[in-house]
Amino acid sequence: MRGLKSTIALVLVLAGLGAYIYFVTSKVPEGGAPAADAKKQEKVFASLQADKIDEIKVSTAAGDTTTLKKEGPAWKITQPSDMSASESEVSQLTSALGQVEVVRMIDENPSNLNDYGLSNPRVEVDFKAAGDKDYRKLYIGEKTPTGGDYFAKRNDEKKVFLIAASNDTAFNRTTFDFRDKTLIKFERDKVDALDITAAGKTLVIAKDGGEWKLSKPVQTSADFGSVEGLVGRLQTVQMKSIAADNASPADLKKFGLDKPEATVNLSLGSARATLLFGGKAADNTVYARDASKPSVVTVESALLDDMKKSADDYRRKDVFQFRPFNATHIEMTRNGQTIALDRIKGQGENAPDKWKRVTPAGADLDKEKSDNLLGKLSNVRVSSFVDSTAKTGLDKPALTVVVKFDEGKKEDRASFGQVGNDVFVSRPGEPGAAKIDKADFDDVIKMLDEIAK
Image (cartoon, rainbow, N blue to C red; front, side):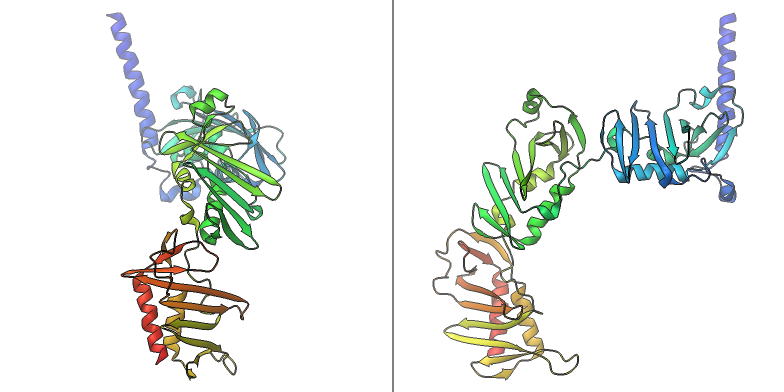
């Protein structure tokens, strides 16, 4: 009976303590103090300038301990091992340290820190700023019963206060959160070639002057935007997790990297970078590794899908390279008749240019008609490619177009063939033919007829 009474008494004491804590903290609304008290809130670390912080140590609820140090302008992780840090992630942490506020003072002299989860804090952030001899510290304990704040204390002070719950995401971060997650590093403007082997096929793209060209499996012009987009995705791909820090041959086999699903080689002058993709991992990711590093990581599976795209996905889709503003001369031949147009410079200040038909009979063109023709021609796009010109009507073109542009320094040539409702186009020096939308071709013919009148 005596034991039962003691148990009941203990339960009552704990209930009373819980009620007290709830009473104290429930007066503070979720997420912070009332608007009337907002001006009274003090910074946890008064006058701290985030950009003066140069050393940080974070111990988290997950059991991770990470030490970061600023080396020159950049941050580096020094513990648990040396690695580059994410500047944006560290910046969020230092900014949070400079901005975190005391929502409300709870207890100036607590008798038991365990009541607040601070005898063994969930999160501890130690840091030094310029001029500091000793570490300044922020301890974060349990969440309040209302759930809007966390109990906290600073340095070696006894007093317990509240900080907003939103701060937890800034401070409760693992080593992986802080590390630079860039999978492979290279200077984008130095990339002059890349080859991709995937699904049993090899794709080779190289820069020729300022343009990208495919050399395998076909030799043809590449779409500048598509290739640059691919290089950009490779440069910015972020690892989602670490599968193995020092992968053994057995690990590589386990992750499908002994026989990669895809291999990407980037050439940067005399330098080379290689990225390997392995098997499927969890949450729509695949295993991958930078061939120069021992670690295996996971990345979004969509990137591997990009590596498996065909050569056609990277071929130039614009039939013409000229733009309406830089075209200077157009020749269009249809049914044995050639219509030639010239741009005539406007006379006088801010006078607009005009287009003139020079053959078969000279005449000034209506501006709207000439603008429509230029706009339609420059926007004709390829929908698909075929390997041969057989059965495309290109042996007897329905239309040929020659456009000079950039003050006559460059030239576009294209021939159009028609078989039933299918329209094809070919360009000099390019293999096979391409298919275009018949409606676009019909519009060009209609506009041509209007100009020929």
